[in-house]
Image (cartoon, rainbow, N blue to C red; front, side, top):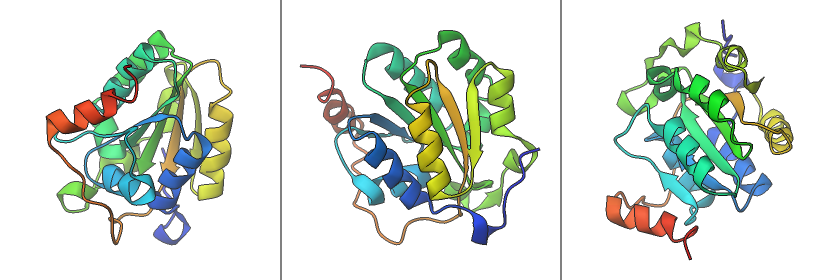
Length: 194
């Protein structure tokens, strides 16, 4: 099972999101609804961020499709509850095997968007599941650990899943996220279509 460190030993999610953008400033970053989106916006609000709303369980599949369509690095900031809803997508990611895809599971073992209920992520080792599907994987619980694993992932010949144990909670402040779907899609798409 995926052991979750006590809250005091988990990584800060905003700092982890910032590390991703710092390591790959040109990457497309698809963030899960709620916490992952808010932490990403707090760390680095930019046009290459796509905040997926109202589509729990679809973040990694959307990132996979994007990685197959573009040459730039694509990173998915996935939630543990969202990935649990579509765990089978990891076998599809392994089968498609885009070398430009990294999935970072922001694993706080809670459904943060709906009130902080404990998720079944406490029973699942996401890195082991990914490995069983044929994917390179790692588990980290510090910002430094994520930075190192994420940097290594960029040199892999295939997709990588990183189970990042993070603290629960929302950032104290973040820029407002425009959830107008047409605007969000156009803003993001404009970064990749000339």
